[in-house]
Length: 210
Ligand code: ADP
Ligand code: MG
Image (cartoon, rainbow, N blue to C red; front, side, top):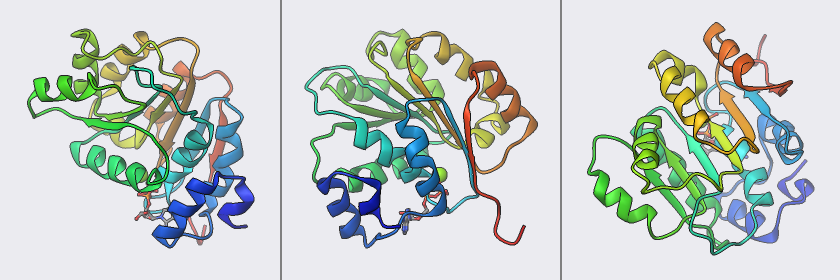
């Protein structure tokens, strides 16, 4: 199976070509159609297996060009470093697509970030606390969010973001696709899933050798 078999746009295939990526990793291959179905998805695969593109490829395949102000995709990650990393990965994938991506995180000037989101954007990558602050200050409108990705859910739980995530779920549109990715399925992750998902589709790649 190659990326071409996933029926990606030429622009996405060309960007993957530039990166030297020809074949999807197992989690990318298995998650693609499940995410494309529009149903809620839980993906489990160990670190380094390509989970960022496992959710971003189908999301970018579905995302249509738009000039609207408000973001349609929200990606929540636990740390500032991950915001930077995920933004960078999405930018590489969107070399040939007109997609506006902004990353926001705590510990830096919120006014600069308010300014950045006021320019209009399609995808926002954020840590939970700063995302919430921007939303309640009305600098950021979440009413157009169609896809919510929570990446590294296990780390989110370990860092105590549970309550913060619940607050964010409350201010997101009800009609949305929830996508969660995690390296491990812990009890806390399991519980969060049972609270916000109704019959999620699970995609899980076993560790090699097990
Ligand atoms: P995870 O989130 O599972 O830890 P990442 O999404 O960060 O993994 O990907 C790990 C590394 O693999 C990154 O450097 C990424 O660019 C690279 N990568 C992703 N998809 C592929 C692919 N299909 N082929 C080769 N390398 C890939
Ligand atoms: Mg990851």
